[in-house]
Image (cartoon, rainbow, N blue to C red; front, side, top):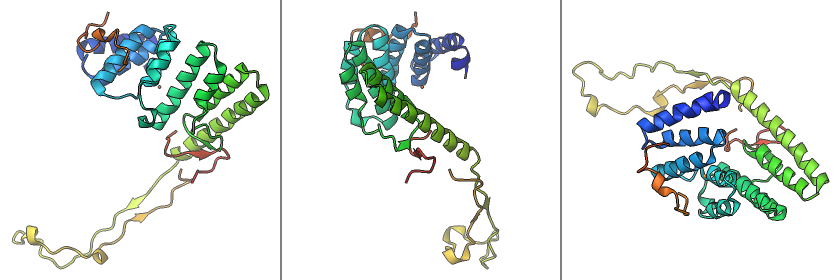
Length: 257
């Protein structure tokens, strides 16, 4: 993607698009993400507020919290993160928010509270999800801040195991195939000519239909801020100045039940 290879150019394109379609949520979201990647946290936060107002979604709340951190405002980051019901967020967003909130706690020099932010149900080393390596990494780094190196080493090892399991799952999915063979229906004796009344036609019994045959799959199956001080820059101001959670993998590589 362009944002990965040339984030500055991607940001220029996104800002140009936002000038033309400033009320389209995904356009403002893209402008925010590219600005964030460039470290332009003020622009990113403004665009994210606009995106949130237009879309009504909280899926970019973690990035908004991180932008407040980038602007040197960890207290406001924490306030923003507490402004929503985390249980109403999708699981990956909950995890990203926990990581951002933990970072804000570290910014305030409180690693104990930072560790607590990460101790969420998703901190489960027995299965690996797309967000697991990032969560485990944040936990390991915070343990190091607390001087608990032995525990940190264990979690760094879990980062590697989770990444390996996810890579294996991705490889399996890349090779998954399903063959569907449709067989022609046998003649049921009904008149299907021009004179027939199709609207009153008899329904076919299930036994008259041939089942579709499924071939074997090879090789396997598978951050609106409530703070409000900058919101005048939002929609009215169209002028402009980041493994499927439903498919966890056991750390040993097998599919979770």
